[in-house]
Image (cartoon, rainbow, N blue to C red; front, top):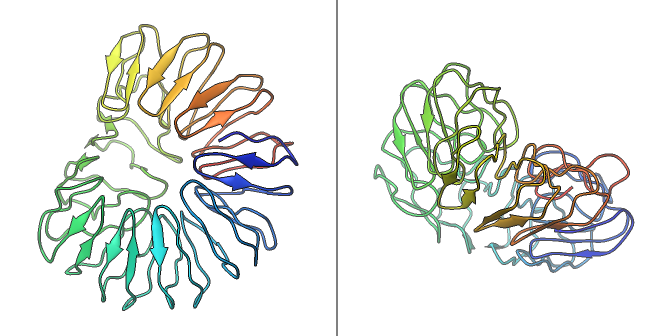
Length: 314
């Protein structure tokens, strides 16, 4: 993603027009704004076609990756929602009894999705490109695999306390409680996941990851100890790289190349998927920020003066 205030922007994930204001979560739209957030952005009553989504006229986006106004038809790269579907928050939120099919998920009748990427009610059946959940079965595919009895609430994964969960991206040990954002842990919990693995003691707060100093990230997309070299499925950081939060956090002037992103010198990542210090240039599979952009938290959060503030794009 790359965008400058009041300019037109085109990115693999989003297309933002003038006057866009991004607020919180993946998607948070102010009434009448072009973009609401995250992977989707669109002006009320206008047609938008971004890399991941293309929304038809009359669509109103509210929160999460996709939020549709009831009765509108929408077909995005990641999701295609049929009439009558109401999306609320997180990547997908369906009203019970609606049918939905999307690149990432296809939910059968009876499935109730609440927030985050996946929020299932116990005993519901769900099939999606990245996930396939069957009644009382363990999910093994894509981003998440849930064991029987697990309740997902928000963010990418939210587990009921004291349950054990193993998934492609995350595996949480007993006692883990996930609250908001992609991952939010209560202090003193131990968590291991495809994307993240935190040792006991770290406190996770917002965005994808917010770690206190001394934390060690181990797995999935990110894993590294301060001053060490790390290689992970999604990222490979060179020696001296320090990862702090989000998908990527680089030490200044260090060069990094990863499946999702490649940051040029001078880039400083702080939180969310991408967090850049002002004046840095970043080019990545999913995002590309131009000079003068300051990213702070969430997937992307820009300092004031920029069009976007949070969600995937800010």
